[in-house]
Length: 375
Ligand code: FE2
Image (cartoon, rainbow, N blue to C red; front, side, top):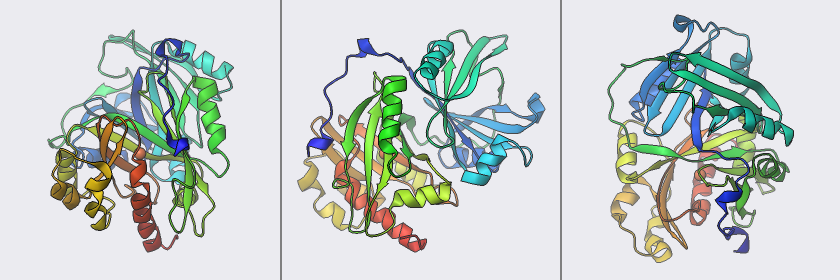
């Protein structure tokens, strides 16, 4: 299908908004201590920093977690008032900040605001004996922001406002390497607006588009466009609901999240079988596909290196494009509201997003929607 054909390779020399990668993902949650414990015991993240009353920060408790290149911050309010408590009341637990690592935060912020981004906070400098981190923030969809983080003047572990912290349960990491992509759900008719935002403000380009013909089941459909920055380290698929016979999974998200927000985060691994085996043994729940999916899989994707029986046992999906193949699996929502979830992905050459799995996947989501009484 033409709409899914990747655009030609981008000239990185023309990158008008250089981004080195994802700096961290910050979640606003109801209980940061328990959320940190969850990411330690389930995913094998290590807690490496803390910020809260004990370190002179009065209004919040934040735990910094790390696994290879992935940094999470889980933050909770210490009282009923203020932006963190408001965010959790309206959205439940969810992503507040998809922070981007830049060389010059002041310049990136000035550029973004001049091109129409709404300021979340002005440049601020955080200092300690290891140097300084400069940060500024801009708004994106819903109540989500992008912090722009400059750390070229900093030799410390993370940020001056976090105190190093070690300890907690020693749990084997599951092999998560880096953030592959982060997906946003936006309201009906808003997808092109946000694609335009990333193109105009940050020089992203529309990598792939999926229309409702590509992503539809008997009951519901959605539309999606993927935007990426110059070096393609940052990839943001943006979804909007499309008209269907019943309620789209995107509508369910928007209802429960109270508007637009981050739908899922895809975490990359080198060995998805190992990663998923560990996660499943620790109680993380995944979406399942019917066993018939595996009967025709090899006809569809051709030869693969993995053991098909293992993939079937774990429910791992496979898709192929012109450049190679990918393996992926999706979790159930990781909080009470049917909102945010994870994808685990292993790329073997493929740079696409698993279009061949959309139908099986969305049917699996709809079975869960029906169980919740929302289809
Ligand atoms: Fe994804």
